[in-house]
Image 1 (cartoon, rainbow, N blue to C red):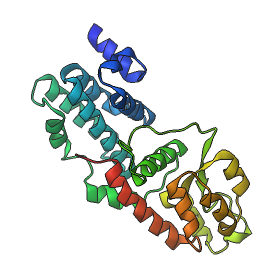
Image 2: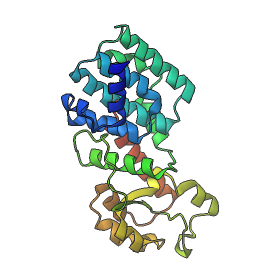
Image 3: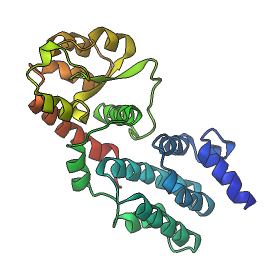
Length: 256
């Protein structure tokens, strides 16, 4: 119980000294799981920390972040059922039945969304929680520019970087080409979301797409800059962009 308490404390605090033996990536992966509020997976993390070597812990935590992102986007398999699977795998680890990250990953394949299922779900995903949208977009940005470990927590200070809705939440007269039904359906679609510096986002406001393009063009983010290459912003453009993001998502949160 004493050992378990120390491990549990470290799970809740990625700055804990325990993470020094696992390295920066493992520490950041744990921070990402906490950001994503994956409390259901903690029994499994506890078992991994208590039984696996540091190298296997690092591999496993990376898998866990991918699983978490995929479950969040696809809707999972139901909280209670997922907790049962996590607890069962924790028991397997404690009993020595799953000794490596690969063995655990193979066992989890029966419930973790496949690439095809994840891509399909992401291509139609609507995100209502800003912290999730910001995380997804930063991870996809890192994947798009070829950075290592794009799935690591990249949640920059929201006082500086904000979530931009291309089709605004409260659109002005220049957005009449979207019907009321389309506005409701597309405003929180992943394809309609981007990252912008707060000051720029305020200046762009709810104005037309033509007006906003000049701000997108100067963005530090590749995925935001790409918005400026399109002539118009309509439902078809949202769909097309989201398909491209879905292709990046499979690579940003891999299963291998």
